[in-house]
Amino acid sequence: MKINWDFLFELTNRLVEIGKTNKELPPLHEVEPFKHFFTKNGALKYSELDERDGKFTRREILTRYLLVSVVLDQGPDMIGVRELLKNVTTNLYRQEIRIFHRPLDFFKELGISIEELLSTHKSMKELRAEDWTKETNSSPEKYRLFFAQSMRGIVSTKQVLDYAVHRWGVPLCVPLLLEQLSDSPFKNSIQPLADYIESYESAEIMAQQLKDNETYGLGSAIGDKACHLFAKWYVSSFGLVKRRKNDPGWTGISYELPLDSNAGRVLFRTGFLLELAPIDNYKKWNVIQRNRGKNKTDYIRVTNIRGKRVVNDIGDKKPWKDYVFITRNFIKDISRPRTLKIQRIPNLLLYKLSQQNSGSKFSIDNFDDGLIYIGTNYCYNHSEPRCEKCPLNDICRGYRHDRGLIENFTT
Image 1 (cartoon, rainbow, N blue to C red):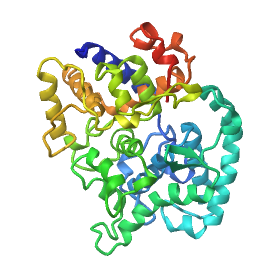
Image 2 (image 1 turned 90 degrees about the vertical axis):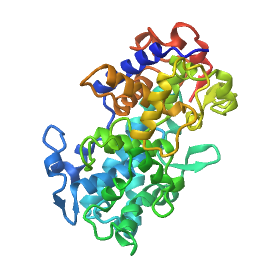
Image 3 (image 1 turned 180 degrees about the vertical axis):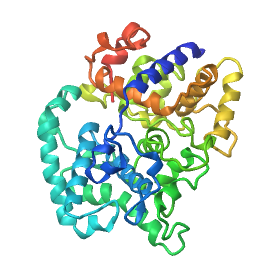
């Protein structure tokens, strides 16, 4: 099968435009200890980012918050998780437990920290369980924001201690280590985490090292999706990058798409992924898992796409040349690519759209926000999504040509 690039460009362009007007951001301006970092309208005061807030700069404090936020964002309800973090942080700071200025506070007052997690979670369940149930076709009693790692991936847990220490504690320890290790080049720096983040040649390399670095990597506390979500927020959504302007390694296409269930569901049902490889390949790669989804549907484990190659015919050599250019100059992969990786096709499409629309910036940030908006408002994770109202229904393969892509697959 030959790839229909026109379809991919059209779908990508539509998602970018949707994403530009429907941003999905954690409400940093609503976190009480950080309110003076923002204007009354919620805009970040960029000219004051390097002013100190106590021992550290505002840039550093926000970077620490975002790192904890992306780890927690792996939970089952994005809105609930972000409110949980915001409210727990505010309540702890009111008690002078300043966990982003003094990470050790979280552990020194672990009892209070856990009490706040439990009480805030109870409140969030009362507020969010009903809406979450409608969106997921589940039941209110299953609503739980605490989660852990298992053989099946991320699962909910009742053990708040495991959740608190592993999911909150591990990312809080990263800036602490950077400050304290004797051989750290960022020891005693006023922004150790921010300096460490930007010590890598590209946002993509940084995202990989968030998980894999031998000393500072978060390991099983963070997933690939969360690593790339951090890159998205740090580089594009909040624009915290301090490196020289126009450094291609730190732009909106220098990191991969955060592949989560919303992205996987929308990209599969619309036909985006099927333009790149046949469905049998996705089954062979264990991206599609037989009868593992809700109500015995086939389960789409989109994270298994990473590293998989484009199988379908790309046509002429131009896409390959552009892909190599992006890999070397934006992602900064030192090894010459041998195949097109599926997870980097959005970077290629966004790069080409930027070339075709001089002066317009197309980024993973907007593309991902478009996917999230469609996934959470129309393309629900069950067999009866709101297709008739979806702004993509006129080009969606599942809606127009193959209803089975919607009815038989869940994430």
